[in-house]
Length: 111
Length: 122
Image 1: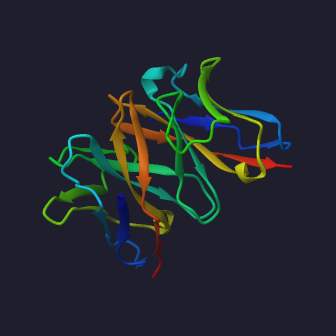
Image 2 (image 1 turned 90 degrees about the horizontal axis):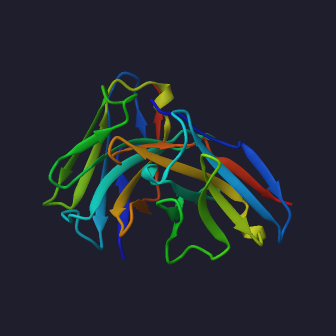
């Protein structure tokens, strides 16, 4: 089964920019994996931020953006706010977009 | 507004079957644009995709759990359910039900239940 890898932890200063990445054990991540990104804060259910690589939901703050970068899916936060401190998970689809695999998550600290 | 609510026992004995139900309100489970699924999260760990179902009964399961998982739907009650057999302590987790929407481009798990903690212990 595909393994999906994320940075375990990252630290960013308020107002700074940080990029989280999502890699697949099977090779380069493409748009065909329909990369999704989720934010989860302690004690809460995950919340969808980005779908299909770079598409935002109506509730996704403008400072969040998704892309493909160097064979990985990427989530970039520009102008980080203290409330962005959270765990971030990527999800990649395979099997005709019917089988999902989550990454291990990135704990983002805003310090 | 769509709401999903998990229900079921919070404690299951080892080797028994874990059974959870997700009740959907504010929307119809019998919609061509959605799949309905289960995701779990062991305490202090990451998310694991368990599987999903279409209202017509098409199912897709995580290969690592496939031999123990059944997901089924009851459109008359606007519910879908999860059975996980032969549980062990490793199945202790918060279990989320969720909706996957077919977007204009691709797919998004855009609605989640609040999650329910299931502990496997004797």
